[in-house]
Amino acid sequence: ARDAFERHLANAFNPPPYRHGEMYFVHKLPGPPDEALAEFFVLDGRSHRSDAGILGEDQIRDLQAWLGTPSKARWRFIVSSTMFAEVAGDVGSDNWSLHAKEKRRVLGHIFD
Image 1 (tube, rainbow, N blue to C red):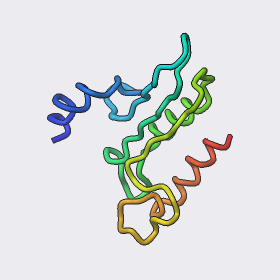
Image 2: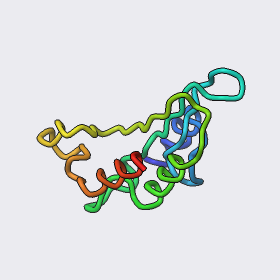
Image 3: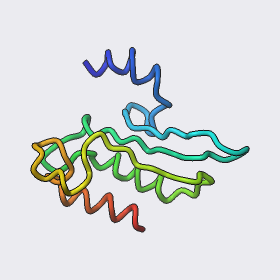
């Protein structure tokens, strides 16, 4: 299923992956000359799920690297297909509240 998704949808419509062979990517919304109006780091919250978390180590390190890289973009966003807000704790199994340790790591990288 993933191979079909990559061939017919993901690679056809998304920017190249941040890391070869992965599904997460950065999308840049053009703005004034020589800068982006916004950048979006689009997470892959499906491919690396485990009891330990949603993203996997490589994706967390790549997100941290992206956050630490200077950018001329006016705004930078992290996009997650699963609910990140704490209000999601009772909404079933598809949310970050079930992976509090990994969520704190991501928030720590944002605030660094």
